[in-house]
Image 1 (tube, rainbow, N blue to C red):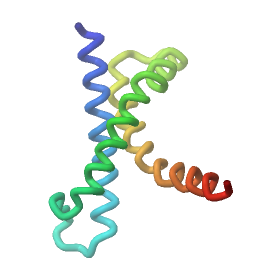
Image 2 (cartoon, rainbow, N blue to C red):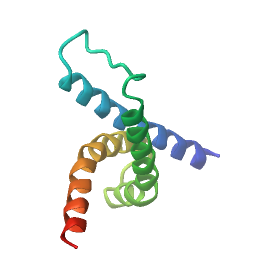
Image 3 (cartoon, rainbow, N blue to C red):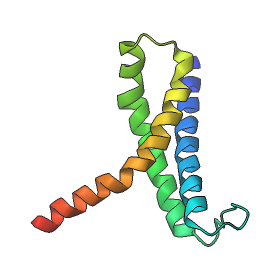
Image 4 (cartoon, rainbow, N blue to C red):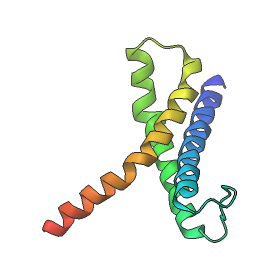
Length: 108
């Protein structure tokens, strides 16, 4: 039971980290009008960002967090913090990875 709860918390923390990155990008990109984001206007981009967040969260739970915890001998209570950091930084890296893939595909 605790295993499922820990992984659910990690998935939620990773998604929240990615959404915090999305909010930061939108606030910096728009003119300063109170810093709020109109999610209804940016629906398509918000759905794409949420899909990317979920993919990053699931990949980090399976492939990244367990090896980090075992390698550095961390307590399991650090897993949500790692998931938040991976979600936030993963959303920063996605545009670069997509650009590299597009460039590689355009060469063929």
